[in-house]
Amino acid sequence: MSLDALVVTPLIGLNIGDSGWRIVVGGQYQDYQRQLKGQLGDIRFSATQTSSRWSTMVGMQKEFTDNWEASLMAQSGKTREGFTFMLGKRF
Image (cartoon, rainbow, N blue to C red):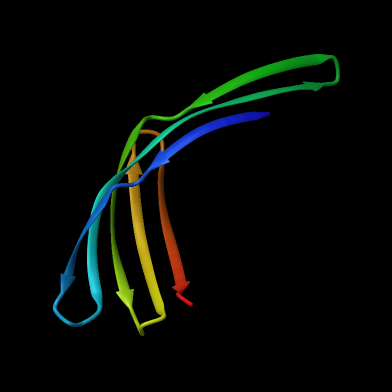
């Protein structure tokens, strides 16, 4: 298996007062091509997977303290959909 990928995620956010909440919107560009090759018994196979380039992203971020933050992002595109939850601590 081989995989070549480029992923870029431009986002813009709006802080909601002094609450620590931020609304984020943007997109994600994915350009990848994955090649799968193998053999099952006497049968050899080869498959290539590519992505649709852009998907839309929307989410919320919350800063709890100076060191802790969390974000929840939803993503929707022609060939992919998903949710991502992140919890981060800065040192």
